Length: 101
Image (cartoon, rainbow, N blue to C red; front, side):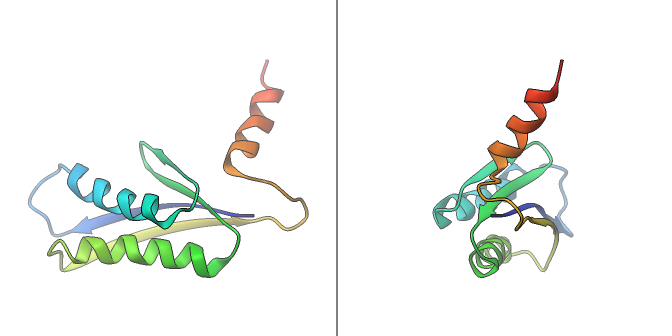
């Protein structure tokens, strides 16, 4: 299972309000059918292969360009764990929660 954390940032806008852009990008990820979790600082996503992962993120980025932006900055962090099966986003969270006092 490949998991990724990413953020897409519009550049050159005249506002500090980003909800319109975040909503558009997250809608694309939701429509991709991949499992995702929205966080306050980005979006986490799961995929079985790089092609579907990158395709979903690329479509989300392109959706912001379709909103009229001239520049978009995207940060992607990827965890590709192949020594264990089923290491979903939730499984990773559950593992840490089980160890907390």
